Image (cartoon, rainbow, N blue to C red; front, side, top):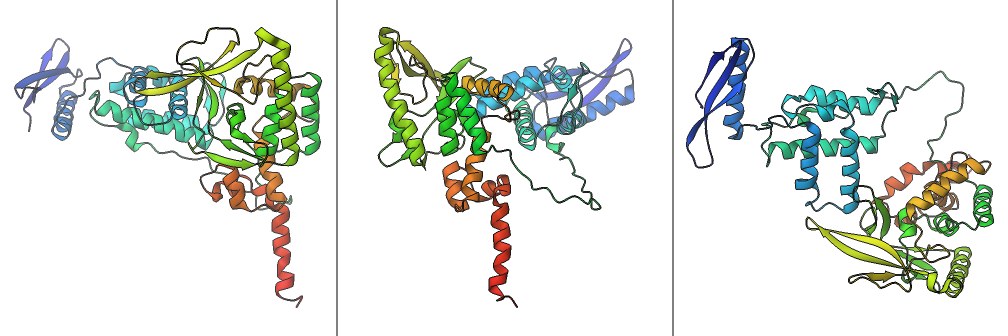
Length: 432
């Protein structure tokens, strides 16, 4: 057991004890206590116990939680094997955490109670320091924030040795409880994800056609395939087989807000999948291909070609996307990509641009006040399940990890199917 003592300097007590340095020598370390001798002796006992258990003394000094999170991103998160999409999401979560008081708190003063209070605030909602309301976060976001804090505080203990224990190990996610009114006379409401009708889809596409907006093709592809916005924008003509009417989802396009670059990377689950499509979409795609060939001649030297280039940072590869006029000198290392979703001048249509157009449409098209691009994915799935498609087939088309995810999210689409199934009993019992 390490030997220690306390002493008074001015009005304050200090505690000190011997530890082993890197060379194995016994050196004395001194730390500030309080104005109370008994409190300082308690701090000494706790420090010596921590040292005996961990064999190191925390050296957080004046570093804040926010500074520790930045350190974690650079030294632990970026060099990890996590996907670029996950790294980007975790980095965004850190940026948000740093806006709250917990981000400016000194690391060495943080307790499990502080972290639990922050997690509860994010989970249940409340009032921000500036007086604005903070709505409750979804379970998915809460799991993300928890993962960030768990990983960062574990990193602060080891290998950084900034603190001697991880206070996040005592923090729990406490979900919001839903109250059920058992005396309500209203019918049970099915849990659902928002979808649009075919009529609303025609209104949306009509609005985009009238304005010759390049977001039209991404919307059409998503409606007939259920692809995510980044997957649609990441499609190339090499991914599409028009003869056999299927496409291969290999990559996703996203804007990396940390690096301020448009990038292509893996899909959400880093899996390649094949999606068959109908005759209607086949005709749409054939027409789009012809139109793009015409535009090459129409725009001539002003027509753009699209490229990607690999950039290495901290053993992590990023694939940045660029558009260049066809007459421009192509930098070394740039490789051409023939994106399906492009503007009339050939420049790629980004996921961000498509999302902005959808936000504008919801304000200008009657009946689409709540519309967002991901509703096209919900609608695609709802149409398939309501039409009698097998849940396992829909799961494969969507790229979900298991069929339970598909059915739990889109259970509302099986309302008619459940009613039909219940009536099968009449046939089983023979009407007895």
